[in-house]
Every structure is written in C-alpha cells, then in structure tokens.
Image (tube, one colour):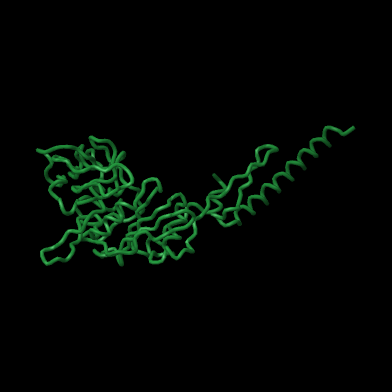
Length: 307
C-alpha cells in the first residue's frame, strides 16, 4: 500500500508534468502567427483543455487593395485587429498642411482600398499629438482616433451636414438653424452640440454658416463625448469640432489649410461619407508615415495568449 509520502510525491510529479505540458502548449501558441485561421489557444482549466480560435486576419494579398499603403495598413492591423476599416491621413512632416487620405475596408475575407489616396488638407500649423494640442493652435490632432459621437436633439450622431444625407451608415443630422458645436475652452458647451441661435459666439461654430465647408462632415473622435477635456474650468482644452469635411476654397480656386480639421474634395467626401461604417469599428490614423509605422503592436500572439 503506498505511503502518504509516496502519494505526495506522485501528486507533485503529476503537477509538474501538467505544468510542462501547459508551458509547451503556450510556446506553441505563441509561435503560431496571430490571425491564422486554424490557430488555437489551449487553456488548462483543471483537467479540461479549452480551445478558442485566434482572430482571422483578412488578406492583404488582394488586387482590390492596390493604391492603399499595404505596409502601413499591416502595421495598423497589428495595433488593433478588431478594426475592419482604417481612414489613413498621412502627411510628409509634422509641419505639412497637405497630405493624403485613403480608406481601407474589409470586404468578406480581404482588405480593399475603398478610397484611393486623395489630396487632403490639414491644419495651418501642421499636425500635433492630441495631448500636446490646444484649441486655437491651428494644428490637426495626430494619433489613432475612433469615430466621434455627440448627443443632439435627434439622438447621438457621427455624420451631419448642410446638404441632404448622401447615404451614410447610421444617423445623419441635416443641420438645423441654431445647431452649434461648442468650441470655447473651459465652458460647459466645449466639445458638445447644442441648439443655440443667440449665444453661439466666439470660437463656437454655428454650423449653418458654413454651408459649403460643412456640406457633409464626419466627426473625428479626438476629445469627444463622453469625456471631453476642456468643458470644465482648469481642464486642458485639447480639441473641439475636429471633423472630416469639404475643402475650403480660396478665391483663386486653390484649397486652403484648415483650423484643425481634415478636408478633402467633394467627390471624395461623398465616397468617404458612404463608405465609413460604424459597424466596422473604423479608426482614423493621422500622422507622418514614419510615426504611424511606429505605432506599437498591442495584439501580439503573446498578448492574445494572456487574455
């Protein structure tokens, strides 16, 4: 009959064997490329081994992706594989006022270039990381941003304009008299939408005044609701009213830099408005190509294994 000491030794040996198996399983999972459709992660739960698939990575080997920056897209995908649509705004340098905008979208099991690079204008003083930016400095916030969502009398919206809905994916607000986007720092209305015909003054934007510029617009989620920094005294006013909108045009017909938004031409804006889809978890990536390529990958295989 086994002694108590012998039993304890057997249990310890079994536990060590289980640990080795788990360790080897972890190494194997970490060595499997994230996104492989057949890869699995093994997780020991007592005597039961559970498996779950890695997220499937849509293919970038697709002729319909031609025109978009594949290397940049792959780097952005490493940062967040849950994103199925990237709006990439790339400028040559942080002081540039002109760059390009392109949209890559997942269709089925592959990425496609749904808006090939088009000329885009940014802030008169170039771009600057959001946390270093302040309202009125004429820079466009750089970084990775979701779609912005703001509360309006008709409910939450991301898309709006002085012209009729071109066919957006979601709620669209046709600008009404008095629609005002607050941009006066350290006031309760900063970064919020309100209907206010009389006190929409100073840096606030009475949207109906900019019929051409705000023909159509998409709210970029740089310092937007629910947590707007700058709508209370003492808070840094990073940014308000940062939109993707129609180019401003000078008297000679040339396009103008913006006060901090991103602007593109009419036809390209219509394509963007009807392509951007909140269901795809879109992200704006705004910056120099070098800075965007340096975005650290959060969703490595090792990170997935730890979830």
